[in-house]
Length: 291
Ligand SMILES: [Zn+2]
Image 1 (tube, protein in one colour):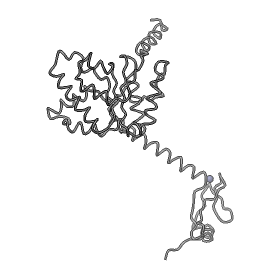
Image 2 (image 1 turned 135 degrees about the horizontal axis):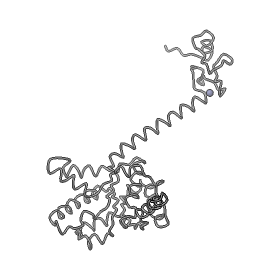
Image 3 (image 1 turned 60 degrees about the horizontal axis):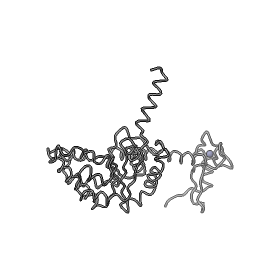
Image 4 (image 1 turned 90 degrees about the vertical axis):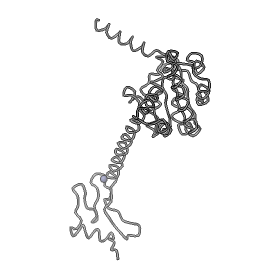
């Protein structure tokens, strides 16, 4: 039979030295209390069947704090692991919405991007993709990298890549390196959100290499269809309007139609020319220094 210790037995144990008072405790009516918060350091069950040592208020708080720290560390480790998976380059690894320079011309789109992240579960469930376009230096990559990091922080599996990288991986698979096409497509579909940066760049000057370009188009269509069938969203960013993918770059109409279908919302990022701004700031600094 199990022997329980009643409150009286606990008191007796403190009296006979079986239980030792700790330096930050004092005895009150034969039982230990915390010197700091004056709360009991013992616990007794309602039916007085067992009495044990317990935590006082400050110990409880300390325990909670420790738990919070461990939880934070765990979250950070998981975030770093998922981030490695996302393939985002080092340059964009640590940027979040709070790092963005919000201007009159980009405030709207940043608000939209925030809503997208806030409602990410709805976006994912309904397969809502985006097509973000704007000039070369409008900050598309910065914006989409922010979104990617925020989603990763929320616990989603994201991939941030561009068509050239995917095509390179497919090419490598022909030499027996890397993943095969099927495996690659399967892997791409394991990500909740896929970001395809700078869409269209691969097809500039395609007339000089029509065969290669045709192949790239075919593979791209396979990638699109694969995610489309898996009902998983893509966030595209591009210098081109969707229509320009046909008129300027000569992409196949079927591909562009699929992109259009997958881009639930098409958003223009107005240029602030951040590179120009950075250059001007540097130039000012150099001037100040007398150069
Ligand atoms: Zn205490």
